[in-house]
Figure 1 (cartoon, rainbow, N blue to C red):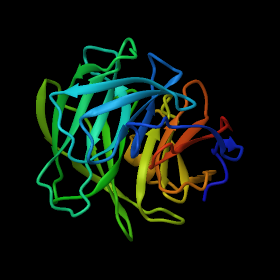
Figure 2 (spheres, helix red, strand yellow; figure 1 turned 60 degrees about the vertical axis):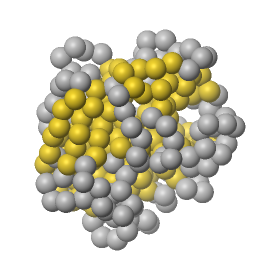
Figure 3 (tube, one colour; figure 1 turned 30 degrees about the vertical axis):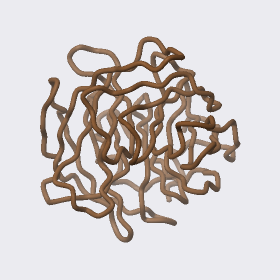
Length: 276
């Protein structure tokens, strides 16, 4: 493990819980930019194509349906640039494949809502249909570079090394397709081998990856791709003992991060950190 270039962090602290009701299998989380006091979360497989805005303590702020989308196995959400039109988009990754038998996958790119209403609302998605160059893979980790918009997927394995795949230039348009490019492999240096979530720091200075048992931080420089950053040894950061740790997200404005487990009224844990 690295001992330098790492954030200095306190232990994880519970800061709230998901509300009772529709968010019963949280699988991904990411912080907003238009609404810096909000996390966007979504359920795992079995739900409709929708997501939720919650406060940093878990209170429900808004429910958003995603038009032009289906929900086979949504596993992750990331935030990144929308593209030539500017602004920030949310990227919902339908990339789960427990049996490794799907022919294709999808990312739904949705502009971050300008306003959050108590009543359910609908946002229209751009659809990126994805495939791997070497067959089917299960995955739960999507990473979007905050400057370039490059998309990185880390697969989920039960043992050994996971694959890293990238899409350096995400296609534009209402509906498009792309083949991911193999960009290396990665092995969890401790605990569970299965990566369940990740997030790129909003300033592009590092990458968080989590498993059900550990959180790792990979320092990143401005000239690196996410895959290049993941090739270096990580720092080990604190994480709460969660029943089924699934989601991790940076909190805007610093180096704190939150983690969330699956389950009804799952607790939110926050880790306070100082910059490396």
